[in-house]
View 1 (cartoon, rainbow, N blue to C red):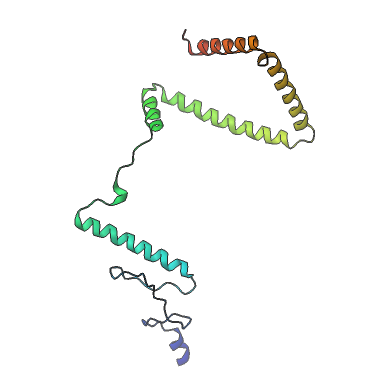
View 2: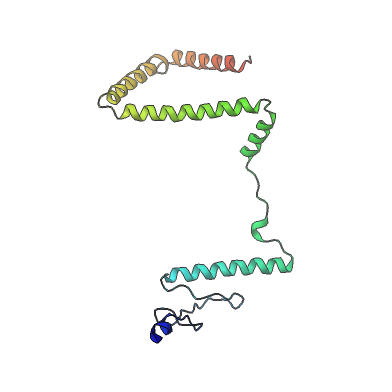
Length: 168
């Protein structure tokens, strides 16, 4: 019974559970005192601990001297985020826009599910691919191959664009 209790006592000495001496990292700084790494972790872990310890020590030293830490500098917001914020502030009916966006996401999710279901059918994807290739060829021949047809297509797209926006 006495041998069992001596084996289970935890000593405050620097030996590890497997009986090996603790590893001392040569890059350990005197400002940071840390416990030795657990015995099952690799050598890779000790340099991460040392790097973290040095990072904390730099922050403490910067705060003590009154300097602002490097991470405290304000980051600049990208131009597109500013534009989106200004546009969102101009919207009068935010509830309707949010509802429309939610319905759009749900419709996109449903259409992706429908397309994946169709894609699992045996013959339908091949037939739809042939139809798509045929229609693309017909559209190119009718609207893009010859110059007068291209100009008519561009004119029609511009008219439709102006019609949708309501401007002349």
